[in-house]
Image (cartoon, rainbow, N blue to C red; front, side, top):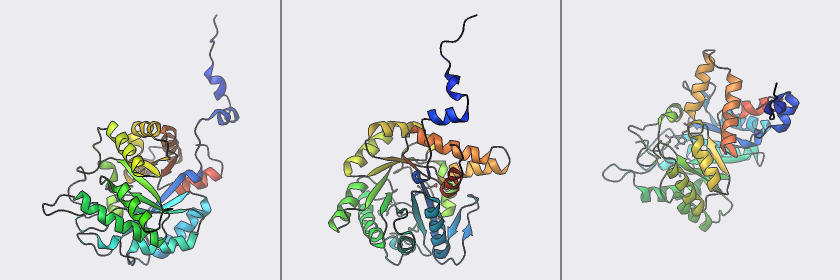
Length: 329
Ligand code: PBG
C-alpha cells in the first residue's frame, strides 16, 4: 500500500481552511453599478431583456445611487437616454442634456460615498446610433469624433463626474480627452479607457436599455473577437496616452485577454460584465436551469481571478448585499 505524497485535499477539508487559503476575494468596493437614466420619465421603466434592470427617472436614479452607496459598492457608471437625437449627438455635451443633469443630481446625492462615473460615448445621443460622427460617405470619422469627445468630457467634468469611461474605441481618444481636460483645469478627472472592447453579440440587451438607433455593427472600431494580442496593444497604447485605468469588455468570454492585459500594464485593470452576460444567467436561472446566486458569484470571482481589480456589473448592489451577509465568493 503506497500513500500519496501530495494531498491537495488537505487544504479543502473545511470551510475555515478553504477560506484561509482562498486566493481571490470579492468585495463590494470592487463592484461598479451601471445605471440608465432616461429623459422625460416620471417612473422607472423595466428593460425586458434585462430582468431586474430599469431605465430610471431622475428621482428613481437618485434613490438607486443612494442604495448603491449604502451597499458599499465602489461606484456607479451613468448612461443617459435622451428624448431627442441628432447626427452629431448634441445632447452629449449640452449641460442640460440628460446625462449631465443626472450626473449633477447624483453627485449632489452621494457626495464622496462612491465614485460617480459617466459613459463618454456618442452612441446614445446620435440618431444613427454610432459611437462617433459620420463623414460624407457614412463612415465613422475618427478625428472629428475626438473633438466631440473632448466637448463631452468637459461637460461631464463640469457636471461633477469624477471618472470618465471612454467607451467609443476611437484611436487617440484617451490622449485627446486628457489634453482637453488638463487645459480646462480638470487634471484630477480620472480616465477609464475601454481599451479592449470587442465587437460582438453580447451587447444585445444594452441596445434595448439605451433604445439604440444602430443599424449595422461597430466592427470598424471595436475589436475583432479573434484578436487577443490586439487587445493588449490597445491597452498599452491607452496607458501610454495617459489612461488611469484600462478595461476589457465583455468579461467572461474574454478572460484570456483580461489575464494578458493584467500582465502587460501596471495600472488598474477593470472588466465589464455586459448585458448579454447578465441576460444569459438571468434567463437560465428563471428556467430553474442554474443556481442564480452561485452562478453570479462564480462569474464575478472568475473575472477577478483572471485579473480584474474591479468589475462593472448589473448585479453590483445585490452582490454587495450578499457579501455583507457572509456569502462566499
Ligand atoms: C457604448 C457602450 C455599449 C455598452 C457600454 N457602452 C454598447 C455598444 O458598444 O454597443 C454595452 C454594455 C452592455 O452590454 O452591458 N457606449
